[in-house]
Length: 250
Image (cartoon, helix red, strand yellow):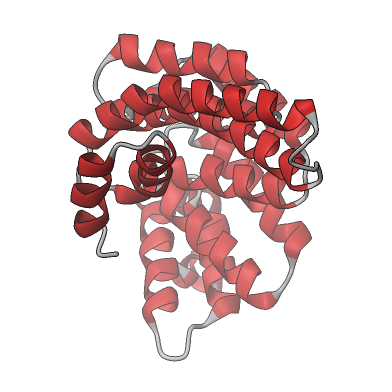
């Protein structure tokens, strides 16, 4: 990669840099710098900036660059690199996932939704729809989140388990807000018992969705495990509770 800058190639430098192998080799150089001990962060950034031009492997150069900027503590350049990755390689989940994590950590839900909608306008994928359902759930737009989950289920393939769990969440999460509200109420307050009734109703509606997620992704207990266990307990489903508690290792 560096040799094209040699004085002996001065007359051909433009031609050599236009060669399709030039950014590809730069991507490999960025990879090597990333795997070195210790990591050569400056080299990762230098070669990643060249390697990103490769249409097939360039995403790796950008990914290495973003990681290098993160390790340097340069959030601004990290964010710029991730956004560039989303723009150039929308099919690579690491870029959009990293950007969404950033927006969520900053409470920037509307910005995140705007970015996802922009990507969905180019082409719908189960992953992008899953991310949108997560964002809508964070926004407490439960009807919207369920509608997006239904789209994922209708598409089949990936993220069906996540979609069913999301539908469960859209009943379970509002119930948790009612539980918090009850913590501030006296037992004699009529609203207390009214909330309990709403909670049990929400749990009953959430239960089949979590159970379907369990069937589709039995190993991914983070999706459905604890909510389903709580639901079984509160709805007095002793047999189901005992079986699941043992399965979860409690």
